[in-house]
Image (tube, rainbow, N blue to C red):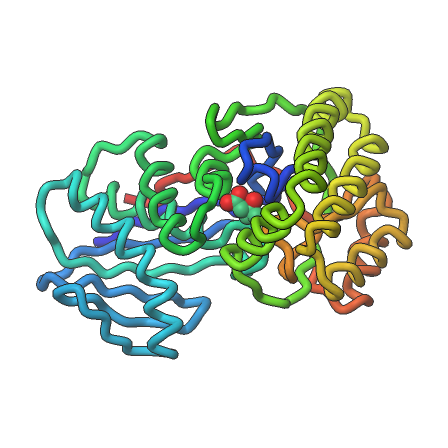
Length: 327
Ligand code: MEV
């Protein structure tokens, strides 16, 4: 019998990239989830299958063998999951063979934290299957380690929100703090369909900062002010201010070189259609943008993003972080 666990994707409202330099970010979990099913095997293989990516293969004695899809791609996607499983097995104290099946509704490599959601779901599913006592902090720590192996120097914001859910104020040295926001933040997400690597985008920003430290440092401080102001605006449900702040935040990210033509198309289309504000979300370089709009304008903004060539959907906040679906 298998165990299924799931974890949500996220959008970063404010502060991506700057969060890597110790600044705060505001992030919310959304109602798109990654699911992982774990089952015991009779042998010692770790068999992994991604339904949505059409990839499958297994690790045996540390060697990866592909069964479906491109070997390099499969290994790249599965290595972090192997790492997460090994960490759970370490706590369990015994090596066992497992079948893991991943099924995710989160667009991949799009800035919505798909890899962190998958890692958190896999960690929780294996933990529950083996009756390993794990707190949410443990799931966070393990999925963060998995993330590090993919993304280089991530801040930890993605695994934090996938694990804990809700709306979080995240800062690297102080961790996360749930923000008690009653307001529903009406967002449209637009996916450019352009896949990109978080690692590459984070490295790009580091390059600009190293080259122009005195120019970039004030931008980093401005990003902090945006987040602080946004916390008040969220509490006051002041959507107009939030929209303005999103536009300013996007301009900073643009200046650092992490927007691209595909994002600019969708962002401009959303603004023209009456969005209060729009920005890229996540690492940029493609991936997703978000637009904030009054409820009665959401459909209009969604259609404008679609007409501009994006895949669009309305995002709903969720308070539910990682959870075991079925035992
Ligand atoms: C990626 O979702 C967000 C970045 O700030 C990287 C990170 O925080 O790890 C770009």
